[in-house]
Image 1 (cartoon, rainbow, N blue to C red):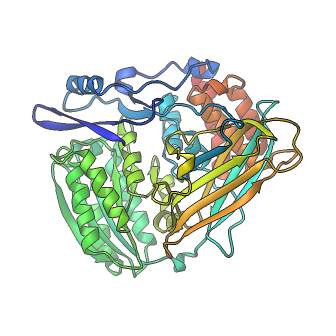
Image 2: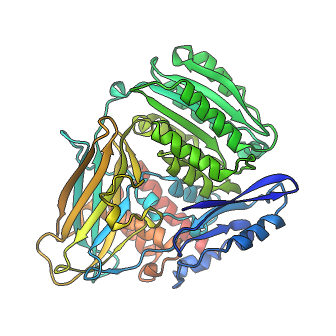
Image 3: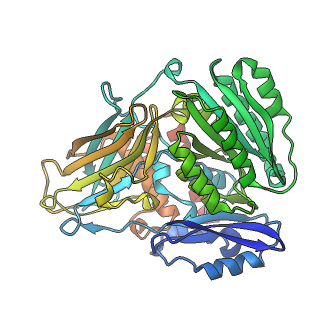
Length: 515
């Protein structure tokens, strides 16, 4: 059970966004406390074990008591989930995890690099780097998902194979999307006045509103020192009223995220529309002084509403005073996605190019299980997904919470695999199990994991992205390579604007690490 530690200082409740009681390799980190690690340590890829014991609650409480009510400018809250190790197939042939379509870790890294800094190691979730890049998997025709499972020699380690597991969700045209009943919950507290955070929120939501259909509706709740309804549910036929309300947003007071979310969910429940998209959209920097009920109560309420088909998506804004841990966990509990918006271009990408997938969920509790053949695979390691682990025995436990996938979304996972002997046949089987969002029926599909003489070009590029993430988070498995190796591979395989931008980010990372 994940718990959030809440500490009261001088009568004000301060959220210490640490989730206690998780696996033993998780650690909460505040950048203001630990400081950024030297850039040279990333460039040298030192053998630093990431896994560590969680901080005792008493230490977190002591830390919170030392903090002033107004956090230091460089307070950045992240959580270290450790690094997956190699697993002997003879001991455990099954690897099970929840699907993840979040991308926040990648765009947050991009913002760090553009500011001339390397991101802290604990801010890196490698699966979100991989899944930032849309992959041209064939879309399914007669079912919810199509699976692509292939492999080839690793470009970074001669004795290893890279196995790619990809799933592609059913695509919907914009006109096929269900009507959307949206409630914007917007943080207008004083911290949102920094770095034009609130101004970027306003521009982002204006882009979103411009894409909505006449059958959609929008309500707006804001919170500073207290939550209040700014706009009751309003048809987008009156788009002017919605845009005017957004344009008039101004920063005010401290932060009461709990009250804002409660009001937002209450509005969504009152205006609930069957056979429609009912979604709360939170825009915040995640910094919160919560109300008396506490953050644990918020998370329970969010889970309850998700069971009633009211989902939560979180969109993060701001640097230097930002709570990544809370924003991610709110989205997880709310069965929605979490993205970090660092530029107007990113807002356009999410709310224009990917809007249907962002809004309409096609499958809930999506679990992926790979069964490796012990006769062909000696050992394996899942790259990333450390906080998405699912017990093997819970793959077919349909009460187990997992990931949600929107229309047209793709999910990719990469494994490093050591073969037991040269393989010329399938390495195993991948299975995907999920609740169909419309029929509520549980479905399961499977495909063999195929062997190839070489990685496909798009898989090779994703291997470069994964290695970059491994280097940045100082994974012990990144010793074998360098940013220069990543750059060489990325330059040889990058196509399209987003992939070419990745090449530039690697170059910038190399320049930063030399200074």
